[in-house]
Image (cartoon, rainbow, N blue to C red; front, side, top):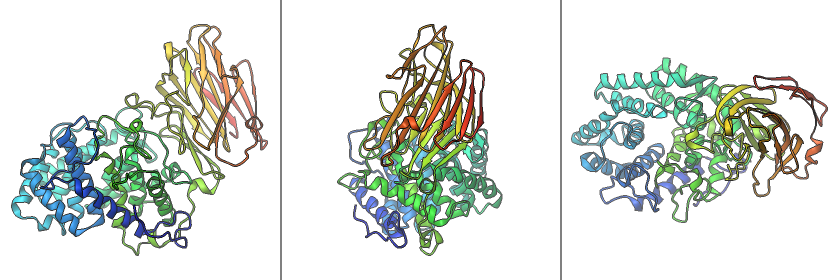
Length: 563
């Protein structure tokens, strides 16, 4: 992809400016055009993979997600091509929108694009095409979504149809119904679960916040914007900490092939005025993520986004991932709605949280602890509250980072017997430098876990109860990650292979761990002195002299001191 020369004056960290975002959008749009059908209603992108929704739905997905990119770019020549495709699509090419079907997802992108570009696209269509488009979209108002972020797709369609005076009452009902349903998943402090349970991931930003805030902003609804904009502002204070100094987002959760869609909520906060972040920090975070992926084979030799994280990678795909699925990344170009004179483009880039100082940040709603180190820009997520067994291992491991991916060998796990299961995760709290949880493990055993962090060092303790006497237990740490050093050493209850056994069905297992890219780090054993009492008390003295005590039982975890 050809981009302008870097501007190190305005953007000393990434070199990226608005011109780079424009060039990236133009290149992505140009690259997909050869894959449009003759009538331009479908975009069949290259690759031998078909999603579980089938080729026709995949072609609609290609149209809808790249139309959204053209809408953010406000490219009139591109929009005219999409207008031709729209006319053909609603004349009978596109599948109908039905309950829990993929066309409902794509209808939201089409509706949002039409709403954003009304003078350039919708208002220039002839009446027949407008009527057929409204009728096709209208099925989204009553289609039953999956009970998750899908509830917001009828909201988005309803917002557009309401704005053009089509079925206003049905549109209002769809909007009210969807917004009411997501309330049951609001966990507080700016965080949502993606449906029932405890599935916390990037759907918070690129769906649960994006659609309600955009709807409220476009509708100029001050009441809704106060509610949803306020939640977004709170969320972004945590969200900014999910990016490494190299621009990488945390490698956790599902739909990771959407890549720099992770930047959408950052731009949304700036667009609507609901962000705690300085404008230079917003651009640094977002441009860092775009640059990170463009420099790591996110696009192939044809300029098409691949199905993967860096290059092609089936490990991050789901059954719904089709050839055009990565173009959900189009949401990143929401930034182009911000005019060139906006301060988010004119401010000098500022350091992101991972660059400024070491930090251990507890996030109560998902029961996460974020650990970052400024010497190498690494961010680690200690997961003591998020799970979705449908998409293991991207939810259920004990830790994730910006430089590692879940490994087939069960990194960051407690393996009881030969079973690495971690289900029924029960949060036990987070605090200053610590996080704790309890979960069900193999053979019906329960594992109570606590992690303490200081700098790059971690003390991990696991109390296993309810296992058969003599059950082997293995503790794993970080997976190897290129030049990044991953270390785990035994402290208590473990041999050099990080294995131990339960006595009378119970056992306490403690290890020191570290993931670091810092040059010449001191030996890990020097990072902390750990003493374990027979009753489950754990005393930790960090290398800087600060101390912490943990009392660990199968019922509770109590932490005192400065973790």
